[in-house]
Amino acid sequence: MKRVKVLIAILGLDQHEVGAVAVARILRDAGMEVIYAGRFNLPTGVVKTAIDEDVDVIGISCHSWEYLYYADELMELLRKEQAEVPVVVGGSVVTPGDARELKEKGIAAAFGPASRPEEMVQSIRELAAARAAT
Image 1 (tube, rainbow, N blue to C red):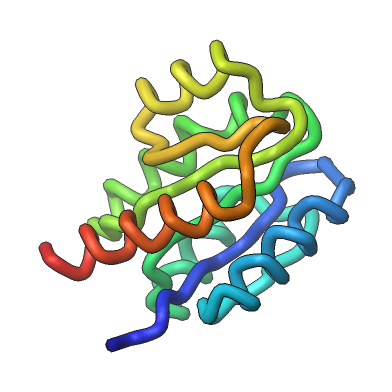
Image 2: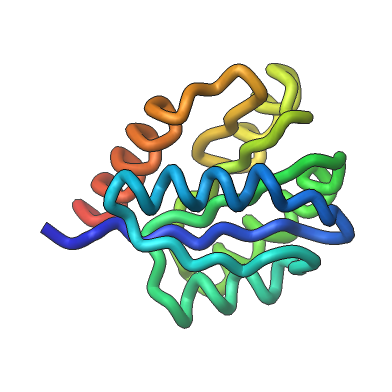
């Protein structure tokens, strides 16, 4: 079975990367391959990296409001490139209302501060499996 490959990136000027590094480690320890793009990314770079690296899932880590601002552009660029890569967003600032809004924008899953590592790992595995089945 192919290992799940996940791109982890932080959008915009958000410079808080502790959560992103922690999630990258959780996913790696769960047997996934993780490509860490780090801080200060824009949607164009995230989409390019996702395509170049042929990732199964894109993970956006956030600790500021910018994920709401960039979600539309990110999803539009993925559609334009015909890259059917599910996007998940996670961070301490993701509220239940934000999670609903993100899903309306096409984000596959959103994880807030109360999310458990097992929940994230399972969700990413399911999204990767669904993508592979198409």
